[in-house]
Image (cartoon, rainbow, N blue to C red; front, side):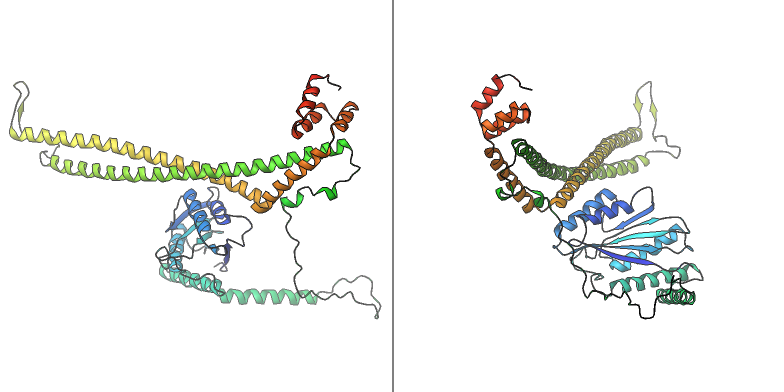
Length: 447
């Protein structure tokens, strides 16, 4: 039997590298190219809806809260897929106490099968923690639970095998000790012998970890004030800096504006999803009502049918004469066909509502994905406060640089071919020098 293995890692709201890491992890473990089985309890199974579930949880929990706990569990090779699913479902039920959400997928073939498990330690009944995975000993308690569940299923299946994390740890320690002993027995290669009084290059380990440098932000790239603007800058250099600052400011403004547009579109799409959900709920109720009508009409019709399915009673088609029983049988048949027709209409309406719901969910997911990507891109540049400060600094620097350029200096630089007509015209336009701009447009192109 394989050595037991569980890897337990939390995903925290404040400790994750990027926002919505839990949803991204769920999407990764659910990919069709790897997952051979998926299961969920007290949260959606469809991976789009499951990602939204995790994103909504991340948005509502406190700043330093834990979004999920993720596990990687080695599945014993003695089990087939159904047996593995039963054991992992039992493990999930005991871990969650039947009150908290969990989701898992199974990957790999029989020899290398493993499970990716996501657990939300929050009761759906009262919002309290269930297994208390934030406590220090939670990983060991998870291992003990899996060991008990695994060995219990082995015993039920009549498989003469068991797992033990303590024995596995002892075997690993013994193996490492043996490898260390073997390495010490080998004669190390030292090259030329050092003199006996040669000093050793020994360095003490630092008491503390080095403090990492602060993360650079977009705001740090913003241009600085006039104190860094050289007085002897040439006109072409100043014009080039104006162009560079304008490009950066325009790019940043576009990203921030696009983010707002995408989030607004996502909120509208979510509202569309809610409406679609209500439409599906109404369609289900209507479909269930027609289902009941069809069932009742069929029971009524069966009372007027013979064993071969023909209607009871007697009729003479030429004379149009029918017995009373025949009249009742034909009326029951008509009611049954009418009920089936109404059911077909409601079923079509239900299928259309489900298709619309799926389309709305896909649109909302795609908008959320794009908005999240843009949000991450902006977060790499800086916080909102830093980005707004950078935009303000861009505007101030543009104003200073533009007004520092005199019209006569621009005209002379343009005449010498140091700046292009477009650059000359752009500076005049930005500085509001309409008369000079009109004179330029009326004059010949010097280049």
